[in-house]
Image (tube, rainbow, N blue to C red):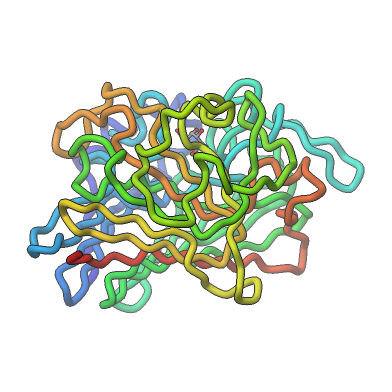
Length: 369
Ligand code: GLA
């Protein structure tokens, strides 16, 4: 069942943000939070501000339910967040970094806002995480958010019609469907930026979580977190998650790549046995005390594993507990960072007449091992 709840309480607060956010009053009047529930008592909440998933409530192996995604109690929390953690949002038009905010397409050079010096990150200053999307309830288990990113918005060419649909299934899956069309060729890379802590949001670090990533290769970066262009083997490096291991196991090794990222903040090249466009397991996350498991399946070629290196404990979330250093991790299914400047990476250019269709599934369960 879906309940749409208008957030009257936050509207006054939101109105004070208009000058900085540069969006219209009418947009803010339409902010809603949608609640999806399933037959197992799992609850997912999402808002059309930034297409943010605000809550994911799932049982542990004893049946105790906890909210395992980081975030705030009201939309104003997301708008005012210091350090811009992108909790729960859809990032776009281009997820992750574009080097120096520049790319050339069909002979024209485009310049984007530098919001993560010296690069452009996650779509620019007002990316898809900071705009109000249209919302539509679909059936009794899904909500669809749509947004028209205008030609040259944040420096990107083309009017881009984009939608994301969140469906909660009775198999405890959040199915995420992205869809986009454009009237001019443009780079597009959409991803979901939910932070997970399977013990519960605010319950310490994620270094004790066990992670497996289905990838033999990753894309090493330079010291400004731009891929070098190499596809490097994970074998023999701290980036080898082919067998499940604790995230904290190798994170303090002396390693240039770990020092550039301040820990893990890299893109893995997913192994593919199925055809492009088919769902395949990308990663499996397990937390031993609760027994909670998250499996991430995707049609995308890559996954950015970011382990919350920029969290510092100064943000307090939904239950007023500080989000400590490495207190949440993000598994961002995506095309590779900086692809518009990397001829060897799979293309991210969407052309007029084409349709971008991409699917990612977050599947929750418990393991009694
Ligand atoms: C991504 C980036 C990180 C960081 C986070 C947001 O995961 O790769 O470097 O910017 O988003 O804090």
